[in-house]
Image (cartoon, rainbow, N blue to C red; front, side, top):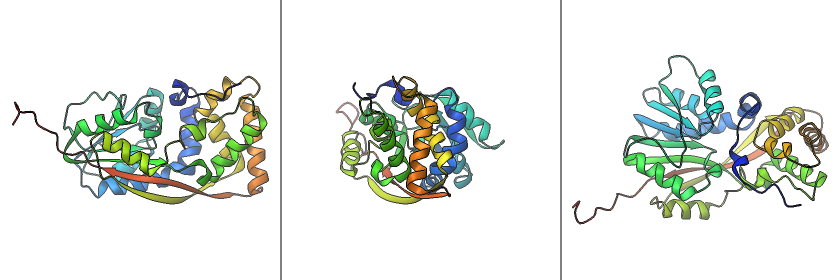
Length: 283
């Protein structure tokens, strides 16, 4: 059979996924990256920040701390993720939560100083269009700030899990992790997409970090707290429980029974749109 070819399943963060994502994945791989990206945003001294693909709010909360004087509008395609984000954001924070598609933003032109997106652009079905939308809502001299994971081989826990699942069911390989979260890692491609969207000359910085977890938590997090769960649920031979057990056993074999400290690698990107070209009638 063919692999779990990507479709709308890759963007479905529903059911029990938001809770597991927030409880296990955020401290494992997202919190430190959010703090780092928020510091990049803070260095731009924004007044109005739009966050796209906010998920359960790891970056939202980091932005509130790093940019206390900025108004943050946090959006996501999946309302259940936003509901979780609102639950975990401190009362009194200047955050507006709004369901929105990053490729069809419900905001006027030149509304924000910064558009920020943590590990979301990999899920955009048309990245160039999504980047154009970010550029459209940015004020003159505004910045589009985002991060994306490096290739799966440079993110050890995820690589071990996917390799084990593929070995367990090679005729119907579960390739969600390498296809989507870890499928947009080429700086050359990122720059080309941004240039096509009117944002040439992007700054791209490699960020090395550490995933601190356990075999049980990591297996549960990835197999049950990401859209990989959706792919497993439609798999013809593996159940979610079986896939989780396979992943945990592989992690135990690879790392041993103690706590896991494994390398992770991502990229931070800062891009700025060029000045809009005026038509003859506008000059």
